[in-house]
Amino acid sequence: MYLRLRHKLAKPMIVFGLISLFGLGTVHAQETSEGEPAQQQESTEAEKSPTEQLEALSPPYEKQLMRLAEILGGLHYLRPLCGHSEANEWSGRMQALLDAEVKNELRRRRFVERFNQGYRGFAAVYRRCTASAMEASRRYAFEGAEITRDVTARYSRE
Image 1 (cartoon, rainbow, N blue to C red):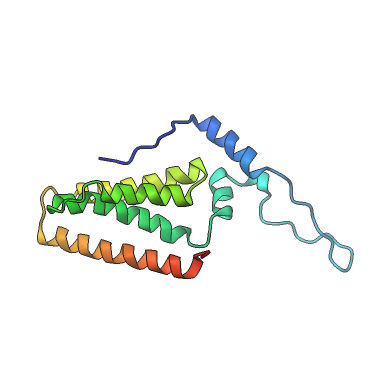
Image 2: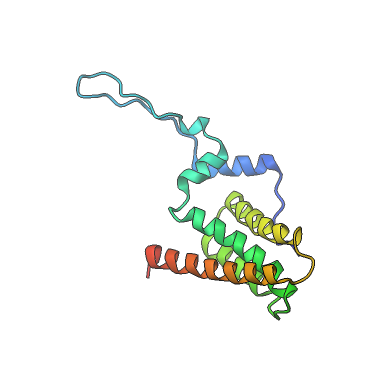
């Protein structure tokens, strides 16, 4: 069972939403002490893709959360495969992550895709529980807990 997106938006609507969300102002050259224009930034906001704009506004722990989403997807497949009675536990944790961290539709889609990649990656390899599936499940659970502790310790607002 893949995690499905709640909202289905057409690509033009996503781009329009990103434009209005991020704004597409221009970057003006600043003058140096000698009165010469300083070198402009590599690209103006208008030249950046929506993904680049999103990455510029992402928190410093974004890569860790993306990895966590992938881990949750893998655990969502592996744990029930190996007889654990936590079928909805991992998708529930993914939903909690989305609710807590994601306010932007494009970013939400990226998280969901990573969850689904984790799920599909193991679904393509394991059809039944094996010793390596149990080991992968154990390692993923450990890595997920480690990421959660690290992000919470470094970036918690409380």
